[in-house]
Image (cartoon, rainbow, N blue to C red; front, side, top):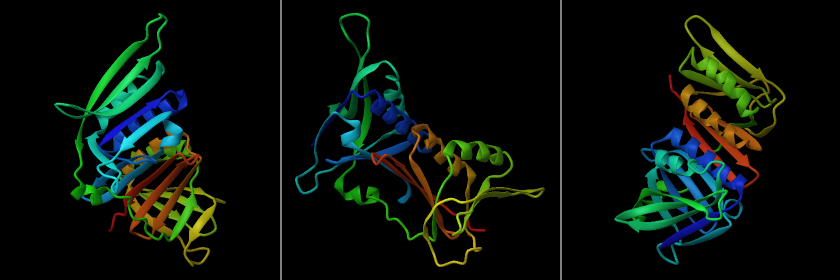
Length: 274
């Protein structure tokens, strides 16, 4: 079992740093699934999916070598502290010429991150971080498989995340719960209700890609934790090409983000049942 990769593109390094930074805000730990096609980050809560982020190796890495536990099961699963991984990757920011990541064994398994830093002198400077990991045994792999995607009642293309974040940050000061509503005409509503007021923001003319056979004026809705929704909006940092809000009536909200095909993120928020 081995894994090593190398990055030299500034944009790819920046994207990876931003991705892991957002993941570190969602959960203390995450599981990396490493395959020949790329790396996926998995976060769950008692086997209930929270986040699945899939990175294409062809975009992010100039060199990429891996071999899994066997020819039949050519995968590697590693559990690590997401904040530590984010801090290690964040250390290169704008001064890195290249970054190497490899699986090593230093008293315990680690992801060793070697960063070659820009320097005005002839000799290059290097910075190294060891992030301890737990190699997930095969008997636990099923827990971290690609999450099942439910059949949605409606799927609507969302407005810009940065714009939504400004709105939801104000709403969070008034309520801990947020109701998302959409209908087949392309109306999308953010709504909070308090003892003193009802506040809502309406968007119209949005693209609907999936919809049940509901009437035009019938709203599909789910009430969710507003902090969890606000956490997802932090993905604005990667400037996604598209974000879809998928709703199963009063059951779950699945938010799907796509960045030029090389980053795909699914984020699951269960509905709050009154």
